[in-house]
Image 1 (cartoon, rainbow, N blue to C red):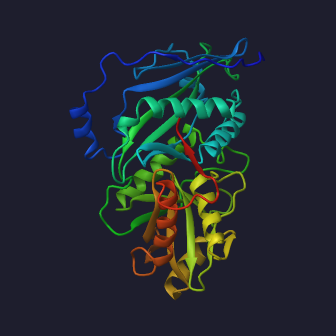
Image 2 (cartoon, helix red, strand yellow):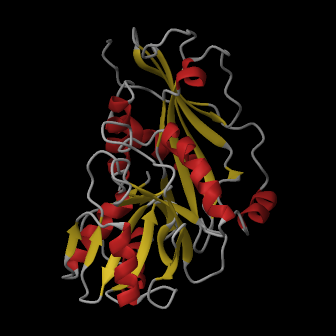
Length: 363
């Protein structure tokens, strides 16, 4: 493999960016993942050249051959992180962790590893040129770095050619519901990941495999699906796109342990750190669906919440499955959930001291 030289980004500004008044109208209520900024970043990779051809250019469709490897063998990975408007500038939250998880995902999918500094520069440059797309208030600019296999070849092997890109979307709240907490459906028929699989990688195939279960959740009036382990169909693992925490009557917390089948969430890790900073006992232990139901009925379990970059911290109020329904606490949010969410968001938005050096200022 060729050594990657220090890359110079070629800048091609958008010849006709969206006018400020039209952009402002879109940012009033952007929803999630439907409003996109003017530019994108692209970097190419070939096994004979390494990483090359770094560009910042107008956002546009990607041209590819119908035999491109990604279309047939799903060699694809992605990340998700947010840019926030703080004190007139723009900041990112722990982007180096996204860069490192992107590298781990690449390794699992037999793809080239993007250097951390190149990942960080790519997101910095896109935020810098499109910082006007960061909404005011509680909104943010969601960044989606991704990499696809681009070799024109139908044999089953790792591609020799790849495209890395970053796009940006102005976003508001992830969940559309106005309810104080979301409801979840426990899937007994489908699993998200198995030991030895790609559960710890952030690849599109994991999410494609979750869509049927998510549709099942929607049919049962739920906002999200909860997956159990693939071996025993007993242990709670994670939601379709986020990790999960439980809060008990003694003030302690618990979250399922990582082990190759659960995505190592950056929000999950941050909450573990913040909880321990506050003197809260946090365990990473397996938790069965039967115990979840029993603890909810007895009152031992007081709160549960989902967490992730998109959803931040979202309380879970109702759990449904083929065995019936149960509520957690009062069916709404809880004091511990709100305390941790408030602490996390305050750091992300520059309203609290960044004692762990998590905030990355965009140049």
